[in-house]
Length: 110
Length: 114
Image 1 (cartoon, one colour):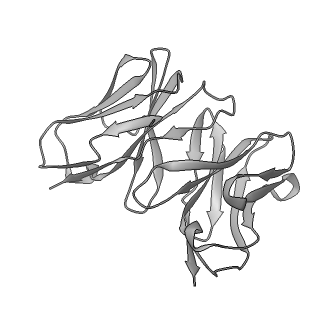
Image 2 (tube, chains in turn brown, orange; image 1 turned 120 degrees about the vertical axis):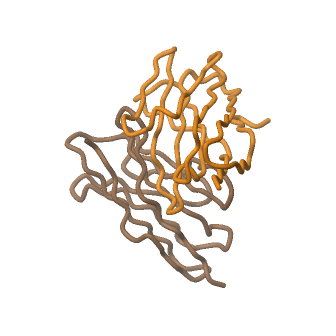
């Protein structure tokens, strides 16, 4: 079965620093991959999705992710963190149903 | 306009009670879901419902039953509530299944069983 693994349950960066949230997938075929963000007391919102059209995917709020087949990775990045980016981030793979990673909590320090 | 709305937002009840959570989507989607998020933020699918076909996660106790009066609604009924049912329950919808269509989530219902 396809799955995703998020490395690091908690990532802390300073405001203005690079954000890197890691996600690896297990799949023998190119999967549909997604990143979602969850702000406190809210549901999940779609940040971006990979559909094989391009390996570098741009999402909302300045986030982007690069699909690397050789590394089976789909890491999420943002060049400069903002305080408002503090949230829980989920990588997900669509395999019949949407299957989520365990989540990474991003903390942004002033 | 809220795309996927759930009610209530908070639900506090005692063990053994029966409760329902309602979900409505106004996106015209044909597939709806219920997810459970535990205290460690782990998300687990409970049900998906598409064109009257119900797909149940086999690990979900049969005390949980989804009910869909029409394509825009998928309610969750829980019988004989247990302490371990305490969690945040999310309703979601998508256009189709397995076709790279993302999920649209409601804001969740925080269920506390005492």
